[in-house]
Length: 525
Image (cartoon, rainbow, N blue to C red; front, side, top):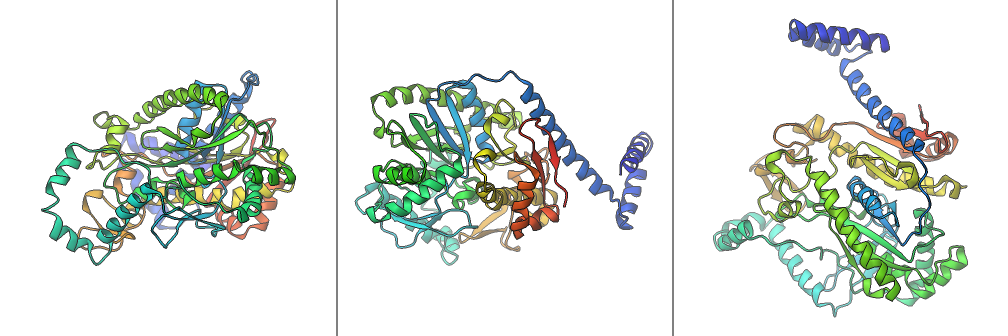
């Protein structure tokens, strides 16, 4: 392979110096003859190897830095493992060293269904790999939920396959002024979807919820050293007139905003009886600790907090200071992400999120390539450029590999799905992509057609991966890095048929990270 690569580079240089068609002809011959060493495969492997080498160098360099002294942690913020959270977590930690961030799947370990007020059907707020374990219903007295229900009913009517075209043809002219207002005087969308502000948690559920709460804290790695405030921060996207909004929301929440899960889990972990039962299982949550919820808008990087009225006077003082640091981190993260845009498109993120005609309100998870499950101190201080899913994991607290098994069978697989969605939409857009947004005709709530006829389009839109001049996503298979001994990782793989299939067939590239030396060892199967 190395000799072939060396000779290929000589051919490349000579071909460019004289006539590129010679090189292209040779490449075509190699592929058409189906020889063992394909040129395309070699380039792909070389690129992915360079990514692995780069993260290895960054991990080693980071480990050589002077160890940061332990500071008094005033707030622990649990973000989703989503790659867009990396921008926010890093800038928040740089802004306030008294904040500790945690990476955890955005449904916060609670596979729940939520029935909004006035509705009979539940919204599933969990990964499709799981099944619902809890169903919560919103109280009928919530005026906000009734407003949400009315809007949802109207949206459902407009979106059905029977009425969508008829609605546009009959109501389009009547809505002309409304459309003009939305185009020139847009207003910001709120995150009222799947609201959980006012739900019932019956006492008879406390025992079952305590078991779920214990598992949530264990899997999150939050089993001791609780801060006075623990914020569970889900994420969602704010875009206007966007049928593809689900692709920008939380995959761990079934393509919905993670606000509801954050609110429900924080509410559960504040119930005194639930805490008492969790303590009997082995995790003591101090009475001085209060859980609150929040929502990270990935379009603007703003973080909105809820349930802050639960804080006592001392905690309110802490929160007031930390909240201003969140706002500063928002500004830094948003400015950093704007560099992805072309100079003509570098509008303010809030403006883009409010623009009814914006085809590129957010580039979401573009350029994702890593999934790292490790202690935060391993990656803290490294600028991962929003390319890595970050899951907190401490192998020393996981003797039986139960947490590792969960990470590899759920968040890692979902990360692979997202990675492959971007990969396939980029390398073969005509088949696996969705084409340009301008040509989309929404069919019900299940897909789009290109123009008035085509196959049902899948994957991502052209604007999700391309800025008009170049691709923004560099396709790479997901590089999974787990801080654990090889034998523990291989043990989980052997017991997990789906994971084993993905790794053996090289859909995922997986490496073990030595916690002391920071050396990566690729696992070959």
